[in-house]
Length: 539
Image 1 (cartoon, helix red, strand yellow):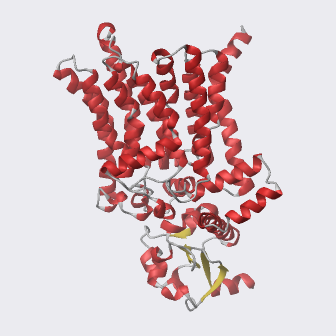
Image 2 (cartoon, helix red, strand yellow):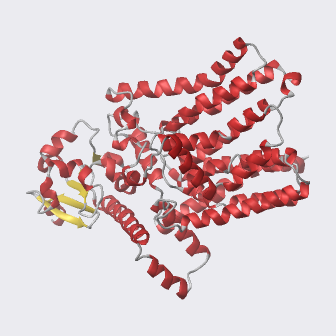
Image 3 (tube, helix red, strand yellow):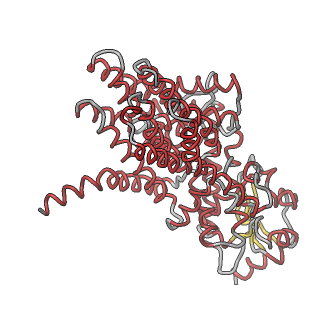
């Protein structure tokens, strides 16, 4: 009896528990061993810490931070980016594993496909650096799994009204959180509306309008609530779309953002998909050929990740990062199932084709990681940095490869990567310096929009005076009387012109302010300490 219960418990916990432990250990190793935490996770921890600990007022900084759901989740989970990402990643891997177990194929094929999915660079990088895309991929995959049965023509004959209603309700509950994870997800609402109208084309218009209301109510409620919170916080419901510290566009990655609308956007999306998600496109087309009259609904559902990509390009929210293309990998088992059931050819040939496509995608994604400027824009430096670290850890560099790497660092892309590493290292070091040297009651004047990394490594946002606090303006005018340290951008920091302290005190670019002495200096960041405090500490 006990053995049976233990076995049942293991089957319930293992699909999520094992990935949770493995991901938590890997993320902890990146942080403690390499001092590596993604910008997105540092940003979420800083905002979540303000939500949980202060300083007040909290609404102007938390109420305009996107995505609000992850900020609140970080605050609830003890301000730990590793725990949040480990939980999200474990849930995602557990769901993908469940979909793989349902595939109409042998155990060996399913294990092989699962391994090839785990080896996809897009999935690896997403699980290690982006809570927002991890949560988005999971919710989008679940939403597509709920929608696909509506494309079946036999639904009308076998329809159970309660089942359809429950399905629509679950669709609404899984679609709604996407609106406060990725702002461009709002464009999925008209996409979904067209799919539902086609799926229920044989029903009355009353039923069709009711289905749209049930599926879209939560999304509309969350969008309007978020705009209302922005209006309460800063008096402008659209403040998060243009404020530098809102999180919608991190200042450190703003130069990498791309925008392309209309046919140009479609062309750009096609180029990226051909490189990073050919398996998704080809399996989708193979499955589409086997569908009957419901193929239009099926195609719309299968194209939801593409709609998200086009919306990102159109709104200027597209970053050339590999992890965002994991949204095409998480629902891939659904397409594999449809292709195995309806695709042309024998079962053996279809299994071989799926395996070949998954392997091909590993190669094309690896090419994208090493790509210099050309037909495709190079990926963001943070991903290339992490990928090089992972590869060097798994396969130590030989003398020949080390010489090639030295040559690569001379190229513009290599120099940009080295500059990125120095920037992140110096922000981390100055934050750790403050953590060691700040005494109780001391304050640091800082522009958190561009220095949230230093605040993250210092671990306590209450030690800092930031622009959202009422005391900031007075402290900026009279720093000798109000604060003990001034943290500003260095001469090589590309965000130096946006530093509000340097805008008010341009003298800090040169000789400094009377009464302050430079205690930490680097090309990327400079720290000035009040001399009175230095004399007290010396005594």
